Amino acid sequence: MKIKLNPKSQIVVLTGAGVSAESGLKTFRDNNGLWENHRVEDVATPEAFRQFPELVWKFYKDRYFQLAQVKPNPAHVALVELENFLGDNFNLITQNVDGLHFKAGNKNVIEMHGSLYECFCSDCNNRFLMKDIDLDLEIPVCSKCRGYLRPDIVWFGEIPYHLNRIQQIMSKLDLFLVIGTSGIVYPAAQLLPIAKSCGAHTVGINLEEPANLLYLDDFYKGLSGEILPDLVKQWIGKV
Ligand code: APR
Image (cartoon, rainbow, N blue to C red):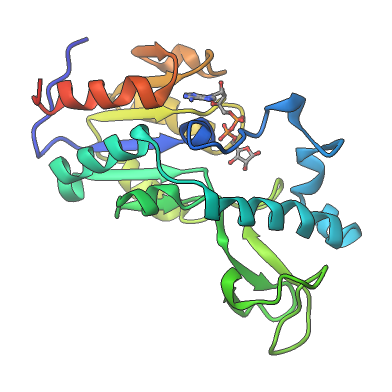
């Protein structure tokens, strides 16, 4: 369908690991979902942190250090263009913890699975920036109570952040755009059917068919860094 947006159009975008793939970050379910022979799910749970905190910290430290080397790709930049056109009518929900949407210049961003740039104490809940803690320690500790710090990541079995805000923005939308997510992790995967049931037009861009494909009105198969910039230009009438 040909879409033309005006600055009053209400848009919600949901992104997943695929939108950062062209920046050089691996998606979760690459390599058969394995990291150094561990299932990703096994290093991303509260139970794993209780049993093997060094291993879990190694996983997240590696990912945090990688961020210094990556920059936003054309898909991130296109989303900034979309926000510049729509202002507060643009909302971006991301499952990514890499901060690349902020680095690109987006402002209305909800990081529902947390952020690699932060951590908090598993005992007293004090919060810290990763750059301010001693990452040479195998398990960084809280400077207030000496408890173990943990990355500020929503692990499997934990409740995603900002669900109230997400519910609010999902209640009024014309277009729902979902990019680079396999559509298998809930509750994020539920947002597409919710958007559809609210009457929004739904558009997806993904390298392969996502699990919740049937809720998409338009599906573009391929690289988001190649597809999205042109799509945004068409939508905002720049071509
Ligand atoms: N452009 C578009 N899509 C891409 C690209 C690309 N350049 N590269 C990969 N993809 C697609 C893959 O085909 C895959 O369907 O992105 C999707 C990424 O899926 P996952 O690796 O499952 O990542 P995501 O859906 O974000 O995972 C959700 O699961 O592990 C947890 O909390 C973690 O936030 C994560 C959540």
